[in-house]
Each structure stands twice: as C-alpha cells, then as structure tokens.
Length: 213
Image (cartoon, rainbow, N blue to C red; front, side):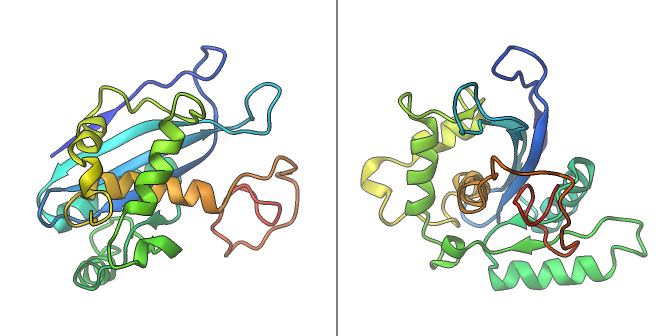
C-alpha cells in the first residue's frame, strides 16, 4: 500500500488553485483496493465554461479493506472532502459502519461513502469507463495527470472486449477514478456560483448555486 501525491499546475503553469476536490473509492476484491482524489480548478479554462480537473493523490493497491477506509478517511479530512463516491457494496458498508462507530474513541475521522446513481448498477463500470475516456480524449481533454501513473496502467488492462462486462470488483482502481469523475459529471460547477450565496449546510455537493464549498 502506498500514497502517491502529485504536484499540479493550472492552465497558466502556476500551482493549481482548486474550487473543489472529489474522491472515489474502489473496494478490494479480486484486485487490491484503491482511492483517488481529483481537484477541479477554481476557474474555467480561458474563453470557455469548462472546468479542468487534475489527479492529486492515489491511494494505491490496498489489500485490507479496513486499512483502505482508515487511510481514505484521513486523506478526505486533510482535503476537506465531506463524502466519498463509491458503490455501497453491503459487506464493505457494514465494515465501514463498524469502523465509523469506533472512530471517535480512536480520535479518527469518519468516512462517509455515497453511491452515485451509476455506481449501483451491479458493479458494472462501462458507464464510468466511457466518462473517463471522454475526459482523457485529446479532443475533449479535461482530466490531467493520469498519464504515466498506476491508474493509466490499470486503464490499459481493461481491453475493449472486456468493457461491457467489467466490474468494480475486477477493476477497483478504474472504479475509484470512475466514481470521482461521475460526481464531477453529475454535479457540475455552476459558472454563476457565488460563495456568498446562502446554502444548506447539509448539502454536501460543492460549488452549486445552492451551496458553496
């Protein structure tokens, strides 16, 4: 298990300033577990309404589910991520609930995992692969920093003939990235977002017109 962090530059070559950070988690099963943190730039690309995103941190190849939960919880607290996107796979959620119940006594942060709409499709990740590939496509590239990483190697392992049947338990690294990208896609940043707007403190979705980050 290792934590890999990346130095990120924005569209002007400066240290990136992020408007929001999202996280996806893939549970260990046939392959080790994985978690991915992605930062979305604070401002859209010049002359567009498109927000670019960057790979910030990978929690790589975690064999033990409890360790994955603990490490991911620490990183989420560090980055200010209120919820993590992932499939609410029942055995993992039961373990998560047990660990969260004792987190306060151990002075540990809790981890909240929400299932995005397409994460509950029996673990199939074809939708997520299509989202990822679109964001990495040279013609529409809005996700940066994946090239040359462990994630890139995992993406290469899922050949075209496997896409329709690929699951999160077979490819937890791809699932983790896919769930994070799904959150960016389903809850896009509103270009009219104003952090001074009133918001519901229970609305954990960042940078919408309803609630600031």
